[in-house]
Amino acid sequence: MKRIGILGGTFNPPHTGHLLIANEVRYALQLDEVWLMPTAVPPHKMAIGDATAEQRLQMVKLAVDEVDGLRASSFEIERGGVSFTYDTMAQLVQDEADVHFHFIIGGDMIDQLPTWYRIEDLLDMVTFIGVKRPGADNASAIPVQLVETPQLDLSSTLIRQRFVEGGTVQLLIPPAVEAYIREERLYGSSTS
Image (cartoon, rainbow, N blue to C red; front, side, top):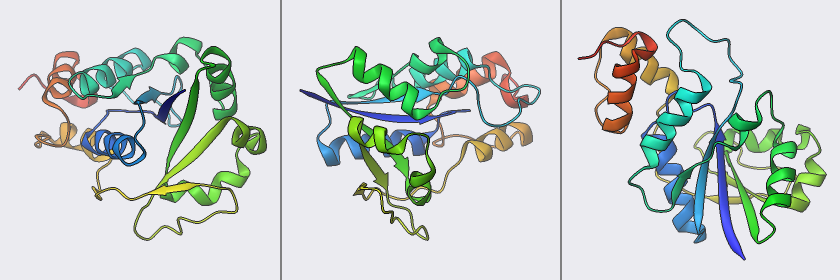
């Protein structure tokens, strides 16, 4: 049976921190692959110059293109609308009967797990993987396998702000993602 990790998010844009977490969890747990799965509808209101769902998916594809074991998944974007984790995983489990899924979350989300939609049913479908974060409790009544990764305090908000201010994003995002953002003029970027 294959072992696949799912790392969901808006990936607006994907950055080195996302890749680091996905790669570290993959190696720590010896997963066959980790799929980075952009949500169809980001939880925040779209701003002028913000990336569309298709652009976010394209950036994830570019980000993982040369990273062994990481893959972009269009699953939630193709389905469209707001996706509960339960709905996504129920469909994936049905479609991929020979896969055991591991759902990766940040340490700051672990204590919120009991409030997730149909959490008891989710526990029957996936193994939750919590990425430890300093300052977070990293604890829950819900069973979560914890993984330590190198800490990189990096956010998509910071990356977008750097583009707005004309600052550097070198080493914060893959060069192919930076080139795409400039080509598409996302986040107020210019072509240089």
